[in-house]
Length: 74
Image (cartoon, rainbow, N blue to C red; front, side, top):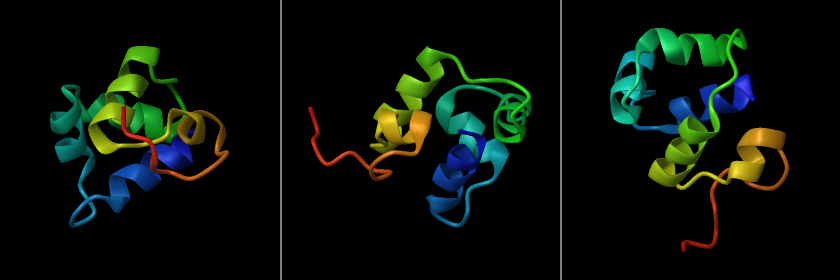
């Protein structure tokens, strides 16, 4: 999951920094760094927020299966 989190962040405009990414998600740069290094597993709430905000498939984020972006918007 840590590599997929980095991939989402780097797919944003101007390769968004960890600090900007954290601000967009209401958390800290240290939290993002911990998630991307694999030291901490993000909470379900954080994962759902990230997927909702950036139209990311939760299955892809958790398992790597399928494509990064959801094709069905609820």
